Image (cartoon, rainbow, N blue to C red; front, side, top):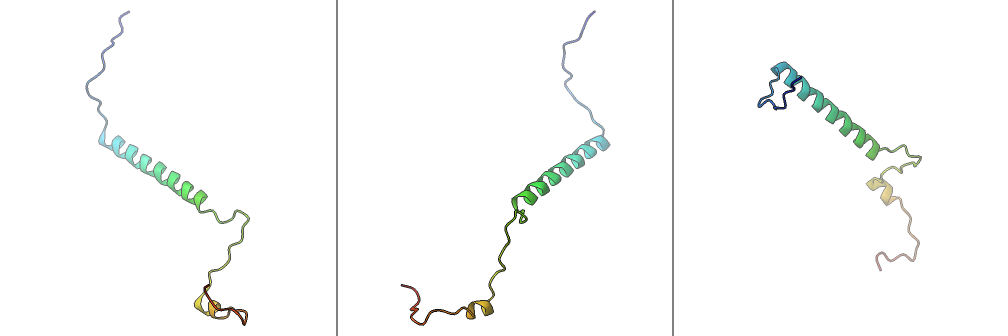
Length: 71
């Protein structure tokens, strides 16, 4: 029994298979990216977020009568 130990010098793949592999790799990368972003920016971790203050809200803040601003 004789087994060949040579490595072929070229590897041929049909264009359709190559395009399919590229599309599959892009799809997997997109899913992984989406999952990482979903985990990184998950806001349902039990913490409630305070709404952002608008200029009208900041004008309604009452300061003590002896408040002089920045020290």
